[in-house]
Length: 294
Image: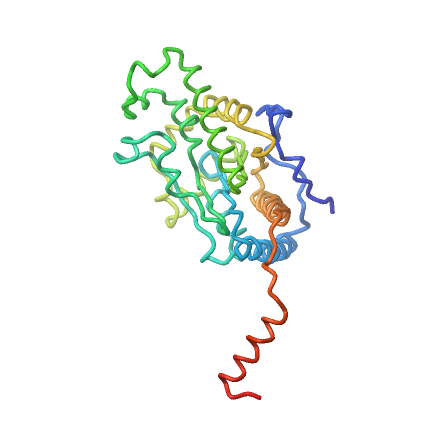
């Protein structure tokens, strides 16, 4: 079985990204679902051990960002690959359309509130990238943000370039403070998405997940693909790259993401604090004395 190489899915400023040239499905890294489950369980154990070191070290935190079109598998992937992580050191923030409070602040304000602490893993299910994706496809929504008219560039291309720059600076700032960011775009074909949406509608327990508005958004598929391509090209950097994951095969998708996250967590320069051996023995004796053990 071919080994997963995270570099095959990694895009940064020296490696331009093209939607048309990026596959939505590749050869599997598993023989069957039992093999995939075994591999995921092994990776979950390694991820938990690496996260324990990060938590004990208290210098680094990790932010994981998931972006995708509907039905690409964000929820199921998050649920499966993080199931072995200590929940007290893990937090997830799902983001929907900005509410009234969000619109009274700058476009990054809400996301600052949900960043993880040092030692913890934070997951953004959608993120500040919606501000250069959904908003770009629907620029009329900019009016809701009450930005002073004299500060909004007449050329919308300039506006998106400004926001790309704001996002890159935001991520650079987090990186320099010990919070590297792992960004995943789950790349699914429109035809595959259509099959999954139909499956939702045929399942009474999942019909609630789909609304007429979701189908209206499918009409803008080419615009979204263009927005994703431009966004990834503009915000993929050496220290905060994008990972574009072929997602027509959910099983393969989860395995690739779990491998990348585990490898990144294990690469962090964190260690368990060293305890003085004499002090440790002293404490052991104290505990035994408390329990009446000689």
